[in-house]
Length: 196
Ligand SMILES: [Mn+2]
Image 1: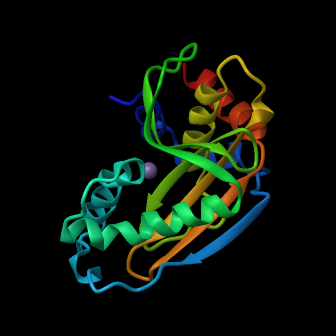
Image 2: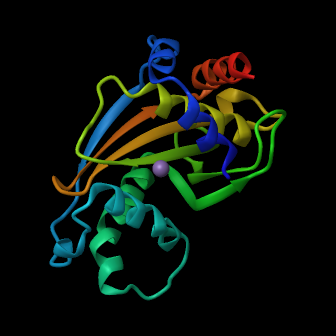
């Protein structure tokens, strides 16, 4: 299993929220996803809908023909991609496998990007009706650990990060951008070490 998601699932939400209490995004943006006639095909069950969106992340990295149910979810991914391009992203790699770094085992992040607020970045997609304010500590921990893996031997300021809260029913995406992952990485690694 994905080492990072395994860790964040076991993490106490209370402890995680406290660890990130002073970590705020540099800016946020709300994307309105254009209506499409395929919206009725979005799963009613939120867990199923979230899984279906995640299953389609690879569509951002290929030119495969879209099925009708792909077309229900694709506008969300396409709108996120278009927004990422406006902040300078040049390339998006969905479901990027990340080699183990120190104690963090092999994992896959939702989107790894090149360009944007720093040379490299990581985007974690979350779905649901809620738009937690502030962002959930567990979500930030997950983001920080992926960022740590992407940074490798490099400088943590060379990696930026974002959480994308996708609301499939209200057709919005709320993006929270961190122009450097440094703080996220330090706090997440601190939680990792305490749990070890
Ligand atoms: Mn996700």
